[in-house]
Length: 289
Image (cartoon, rainbow, N blue to C red; front, top):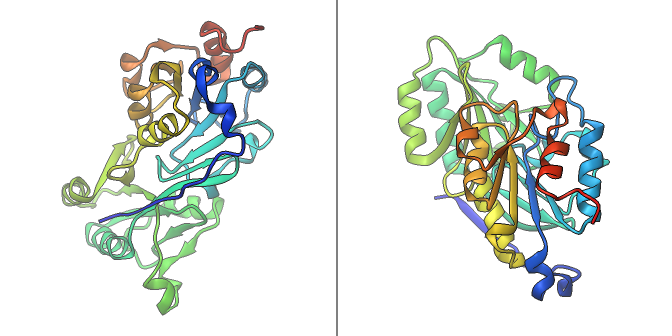
């Protein structure tokens, strides 16, 4: 069973979201990697920044909807205005700097998962809202894991004291399959306890059952009484598919993969070819009123 918490927070300007004004307002949800950020060196194109600013000036609500947890939020996005954030595939939802919802994996399932990953010889990085964890006792070690630990500050769960070992949790995790990994045993375990997205090259993104980019989006639509037809979603990868399918209008980036464009209303150009600018102009969201 997964811990579920709903935090009731009244928006500061509640009257702003009432009546016909809200029915006319559009709400836009953006993935980060491959949608707002270019490939390395991971920059926000100037055209993207300009288009988002104009869309916000036109009265539309802008939200990040990402698989990243809050601790992994890129600094490149800090200068852009967003009304809120959905982190960790729907596990943490913020609006106007207020936490509205969170859901995390309970400690017992965390420990069971770590034990199984060791038995299956699968490398993993565990993502919480505040820190990134790894298992220093895992028999599965690779250059990929070493490189990740050099690039990202991480905490070794084997170094926890007794209290922390009995209380730690995470929201989602990334696994790296090695040649001798027991993939099928782990797949069976995931089918019972998690949802996973295969990103290729032995990399899986593993998320909680019952939360996704779509559930995070639907939570806000319900809270703000915005109709589905006024909801726009922008993404590039398979973990964006639940969000794209649940939106009134869905946009696949030109660099999209995994066949997600087949499920979208429209496909724009790639992120580094002014894709967001072209999409917002095509949808009449960033034009002069």
